[in-house]
Amino acid sequence: MKIFTLTIIAIAICFIGINATKVSFRAPFEGDSSIALIGIFASLCAIVLMLILRTSYKIAEKLKEK
Image 1: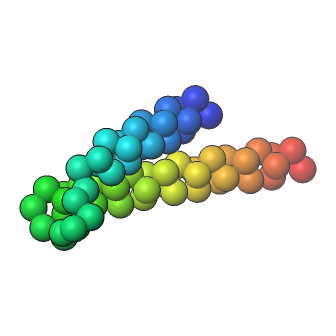
Image 2: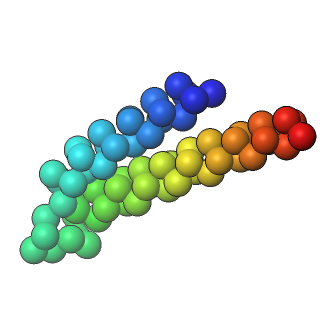
Image 3: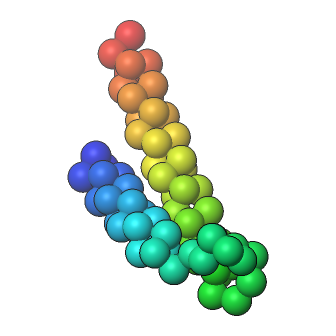
């Protein structure tokens, strides 16, 4: 599961980098820039979800040890 979450996080970071190059800072909420911002936000959400998943597995392992 650790490899899976790290892979998803790495892919999300790549998507953030790709979408960051498409954002026009003069008009960030128009045209392709808005789509790129949505992609960046979605990638950040995926990273947060994977970190929550990893934390929940760590908590479950500690509870099993007791």
